[in-house]
Image 1 (cartoon, rainbow, N blue to C red):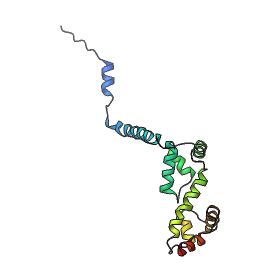
Image 2 (image 1 turned 120 degrees about the vertical axis):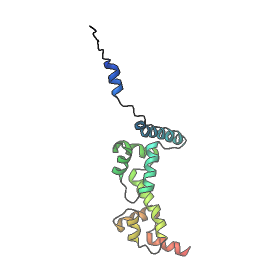
Image 3 (image 1 turned 90 degrees about the vertical axis):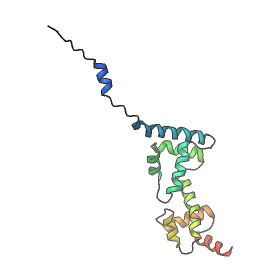
Image 4 (image 1 turned 60 degrees about the vertical axis):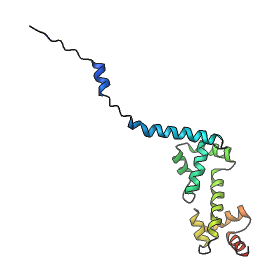
Length: 153
């Protein structure tokens, strides 16, 4: 009589049953590498990565962005964002966004086909009175005066 003794190597079975998928790690590794490279590049820059990314985001989305959008984009807390933004730029987020929008509006004011309301809407203000007040506060003249000065030059 022959007896076959069956041995089961549970550890080998368990390890073999875990799928090895190196391709699933590639996107994660690429994200980490991009972050490392960004940090190295930005080391020479005066802003940290969050601030640099937020400024880039503002440049691309100035007409429709707000602090919630940027904090969600960066996945950081609003309070932390506000403190580092002010510390590194010298401006509050709102002041920075307003200054950027007003500077951008100057490009649109060169086009005579746009009304002041059109320009205000293009840069993210729903109220042209608020836009005009802010423009005058930052530039000392109204948008209409700015446009008229362009004609005279």
